[in-house]
Length: 315
Image 1 (cartoon, rainbow, N blue to C red):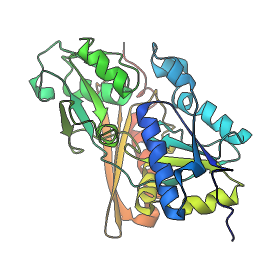
Image 2 (cartoon, rainbow, N blue to C red):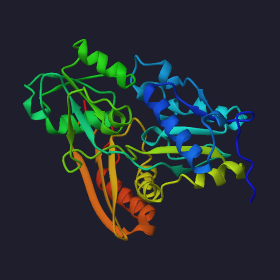
Image 3 (cartoon, rainbow, N blue to C red):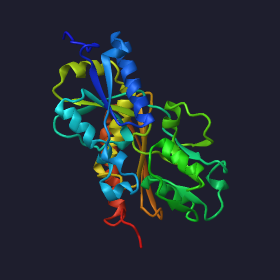
Image 4 (tube, rainbow, N blue to C red):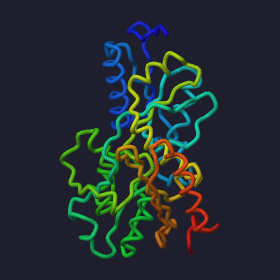
């Protein structure tokens, strides 16, 4: 296939949200494509698209529609042809894409761990009872209350810089951020303690960047193949299959992580009651090519154990 590559006269339009982290991810995508095809940066244009999730930051996500709030407007721009590809944080992505769109390209995964962030305490154990913790993540809220039910959790929405500012203003004494975001933005001055995954399991696909395209765009599909990271794709196939079978959303506290060792994939998954009063977890190992099936089977097992009211708040 003879590719018609983008050029400064006819650039590839890369759609993204407008936060500093989203822009860093879009620039990483541009840089990798430029290097793979020996193109100047001028052959690409970064198109910032404001999403509903970015515009409404004073209410919990579960009240205004969940994960799709960070992707809907971007996907509409992709379907209309306004942009050629869309760059996403995979932990924000719904498990199913709209008709006409495909998500099958992933960049090398960053650090998957959560980080404990506090100007005064070194770790979670150092916090006194009643200390206020800020987070917008139902997963982190449930995990926190499971370990420290004596702490108070408040809503803490906004991009990374907004949450750091709220911390400085004393809205909360501590919060959690993804190590991947801190690393990609080269933020070294923020006091953080990485939390190992055997202590706190991360969000599904945390640390991974995904690139979405129109299904029928053969040129873009061929270009993206050059920058796809196979191992990240294999890991996310298992994790997102687990999430899909659980019907996961921003209203459902779910965590999961797949790691590769030789030809074997090791998958761990956990689900939580939203109030942090209970957790169900499982682990499995399988050949890498069976990762998606393992994720589906693990989800079904946990659903059978959970019962119908597991994901509802207890009064």
